[in-house]
Length: 200
Image 1 (cartoon, rainbow, N blue to C red):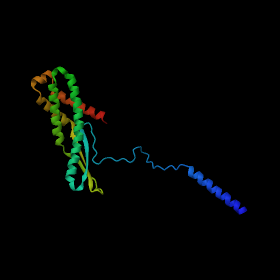
Image 2 (cartoon, rainbow, N blue to C red):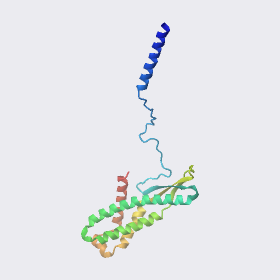
Image 3 (cartoon, rainbow, N blue to C red):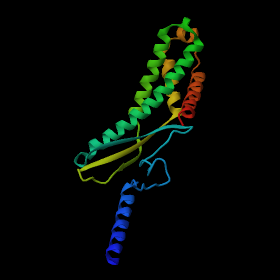
Image 4 (tube, rainbow, N blue to C red):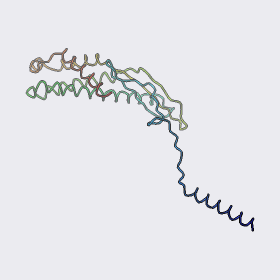
């Protein structure tokens, strides 16, 4: 009888323990690194805009058997990024400039100024030379990544644009808007710097 009583108490204890353990919700343990972004890495060939230069890093992934194509598309990606930055800054500059000359000067002058700038920007960006090229290791799928960094000096760019704008405008148009090549270049350099400050 004593053994049966002990056996019943032991069985009841086990049942109570199992029921209480089963009712508790299991919370998975999360691994925390302390960073809200998890593990982060800087891109190879990382370059950043500064006071003197626009900069961009292009990335492209493709077959290791087409390294030349992968490299070419990474360069084109960098050029697209830098072209977008420069054209955005230049568009803001032309907009500021147009508001100072007023509408009475005519849209044709603004169009000429914009087109001259766009032509030089495209020519300069298309002729960029790389300051860094790196390839990743080959992945299990036979693909690699290519990283290409390029830089474009702001002063050189603003000088070329101001000269091209000056060449596109007739003497009469220059007089109508009081165009001065060196002042235009200075305004552009300020706008390029303002763009960098706004996009830090």
